Structure formats: C-alpha cells, structure tokens
Image (cartoon, rainbow, N blue to C red):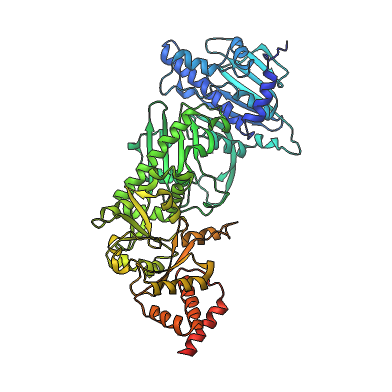
Length: 626
C-alpha cells in the first residue's frame, strides 16, 4: 500500500532538488555519504557492544552501473535499516537518522556521522524516476524494500536479502534536450565524481573498471580487462600526522590538486580544536596565475565536511587581499548538506575564516623575517594585492596588512618594510617621506627630492599605481605621518628661515605675472624652498597628488580629476635672473620663458604637454635668439 510523505514533504522535496543542489552530480556524493554513515554506525556498535561480530575488511561501498536497464546501484555493508527506520528516515523528508544517532550516542572524535540534515538522500530524484532501497538491519533476518517515484509517496514491503546492509537502486531518467542523464551510467564519469567529492571517504568505494592493458610479458600486445577496483584513496593527506609527511608529499599534493604550476613559497598544515574544529592545508604560491587580475579568477579554498567535498571554491574563507592562497579546509563541525547561501551566514565558517586570516598573516611575517629572499619573490607577485587590501574597505584592513608591505628605499637601494624605515629615521624626523612615479630611475632624479636626499633623509619610492592610495589611506605608521616629496610642505623646520620665508615685492610681482600667464593650469606660482640645483618643479596642494591624477585620469569617468598644481621656481637659479630681466625689458620673452618652464615641469613629472607644437616652436625661438 502506497504511503504519503508527511505534510509539506512535496514542497520540501521540490525545493530541495531545485534550490539546495546546483549540480545534479551531487546526488552520488550524498548517497556515498549515507553509505559511509551506515558503516560508521556498525563500526561504533561493534566498539560499544562486544557481541557484535565486526570485520572491518568487509566494510565497503560498491557502485554498479547497468546501462542496458538504466540502473545505478550504490550498495554498502553497513548497519542497515528496519521497516520502522525506513519509515522514519526515508518517509519523512528532512528527518535525519544520522543526526539522532550522533546525538544519542554522543560520538567523539573519529566517529563523526557526515549527513545531518536528512535531505541528501532525496537528491537521487534529480537523476532518477524511481528510487528503490533494499535494506536488512544488523541482527535481523528480514529485509525490506522501500520504493518511491517522487513526492507522490512511497511503499515499504518485506523482501529477501542475503547480507546485512543497504542497496540504493536508481532508475536513471531518459535524456532530454537540456539534460544528458546517460553520463551517470558511464564508468569514467562515475569515477570522476567519486574522485572529486568522495575520494577521502574512509571506506573503500569499489567499482567494476574495464579497459586495455599490456599483456604480462609482452611489449606490444594488449588485452581487454574488467575487474573490480577501489577507486578512492580513503586517507586524505591532511588527516595524516605531519611527522609522516615530507616536503615532497606536500608539493605533490599541490600539483595533483592543480593549485598551480609553480612551486609554492610556503605550505601550512595545521589543526585547530576549540569552538570549531578543523584541519587545513594552505599554500602560498610563488607565481601569479595568468588570470589573477581578471573577472574570471575565482578565489576560495576547497571546503570539506569530514573528508567529503562541500564546495570546490569557498570564497568566504578568504579575504580578497589573501585571495592568492590555495588549499583546503576540512571540518566535522560543518554540515554536509549546506548551500552557498547558508554558508555565507554560518557562524562557524566565519570563525574559521577569521582564524585562517590571522594564520596566513603570521606565516607571511615569519617568511619575511626568516627567509627574506623567498618573501620578496612572493611579494613581487602578490604585493600589489596586499596594497589593494590596505586601500579597499576604507582602510579597515590597514592594521592587518601594514607590516607585510615593502617599498624601495632611496638609501638602502632595495625593498624595505615600514618598520625598517622608521627604525632608521634621523633624530627629530617627523615624517615618512615618499615619492611616487613610474620607475625608481625616474624618481631618483626628481627635483622635489633633491633637498631631502642632500640632508640624508630616506625616501620610499612608490612605483605602482596603488601605492600612494594605500599610504594615503594609512595616513601614518607608528605615529609617523606619510609625506610626499611633492606635497605642499616638506615639514623641515630649518627651511622656515628668514632668508627663504617670503619673496620681496618685486619677486612676488614676477610670480603673480607668471600665474596670470598660466591661468588655471596652476593653482599658484612660488619661490621654492626645496630646489637647490634644478630650476623648476611641480608640486601639489590638497589630497590629490599629481601621480594620483595620472592614475585616476586613466580610469573611466576620471578625465575631469585634477590635482591643484603649484609651479615652484628656484629663486637662486640663473633662470630666475633671466625672468627678472625679461619681465622688465621683453614681455614676450617673459611669456615664452614662463610657458617653457611650465612645460619642462610637466615633462619632469611624466605629464603630457598641453600643446606639443607650440612647445617645440618655443624651443626654436630660444635657440634662434641664443
């Protein structure tokens, strides 16, 4: 007699099939996990009841595909089910016998039951028209047959079965225009699904495997074969004792999992027991993936629940600034049947993510301290991402990342940390000085840095477009503010002397005249307090620097962003004397000199000249006049 699922079961079944599982192949993972649970229950029963005759060598899961009849069978030698247990576990959607078993027996480490939501079994209906379960419980001679064609209901009736255990038999659906169900009867496809999701189930998963191989004793003669093989590896590397593993084991695993084609600069294998327990293997790559800065790149770690893959890439485990990290996390505290949406709100997952973030930072700091060469190789590939991390989210991650940053030093002629810079600061130095540009070679020649270098101050050279944005977001490091060599004021008090404090009236008139000629191209023209041998330079007022203007203008809708530029003239240079003479005797020449100086300052900054033709004509005029 057909029985009906309990109230709401039809709706739940439909919701589960269409919402919880994105990929139909997941059904095999669920059924294998249920089979593993049944074996765990029998194993645990044997541990607690000495009268139970338990032979671990006879514990296995077998997958059999019958193409001719479109039948796929997943069988186990586990504890089996009585009619009442079938009624309870299979007749009520979202009822979990595994969860109750775990709760009632207070299972400790090593005896975890994977499935706890009780919905995984019903994923079989994604690929099957009819699902049949034949089961004989341990200690019983009577077997029972459960059968259903979906949400309309099910039947349970007695049957015969020679051995204890359970068989789940799926009548695979016929193909449609949109779906190829034949693939779930193909040996290669079934093996691939097992390898992907269930490779580390701790019981052997057996399947009949066929193919061609060399005949024994022959070099060129082949034979067809068909034999039962164990297709899962059973013991994952992360569950082995670290003392048993070598560097080669970790590197081989990195390669086998296709995490990258490089050799990672560091691998981390650790376990945590506490509010949430988990094991992780993390790799810090040396080389940047070819698609790393594209939309196609997917960050995330593999996420397992007791050795069963939940998600191939779980983005919630890593912050964006550590998105280069590869590896996996396995936790028995996470439910197997959990959707991507549920993961985003999972408290335990958030706790794991927080711990991983701190662990990665500490490991990078350790690499920086003890193997600088390796760290710099890593930083060459991923330092940009760390700096983006400082800048993004309104600087909320700057404390996390600031000690991992490296910048090229004018004094050391190599990459240095901010801590190393501060440790070498001159007595009384108030600021961390930096210069931003497209290359170290260019920055070493900047007129704006001339005075600081002459006085022995160290300057950090920022050569990536994100660098200055990151420092602006940080504002300071160890209470030392960052100051650009091109900023409005260098903050060196000895410059504020009487001789250079302010131009006299005649000099100010020259500066005003130059400003009038240049118009809104500059915010101000002034006598420089930083130039020594160079005649001219551009500096800026306000928060947007000249280098930031370049970066922002290259972005969509950034063409109207401008820095407030200041043209600084060296009052002690011969050119200023020439300006004084020209303003009195030859106004046209004064205008010519003003435009030339402005365009020279633009070129020094790597900015385009507004009118290249006019600029070359001005140069020709000077050449002819001389």
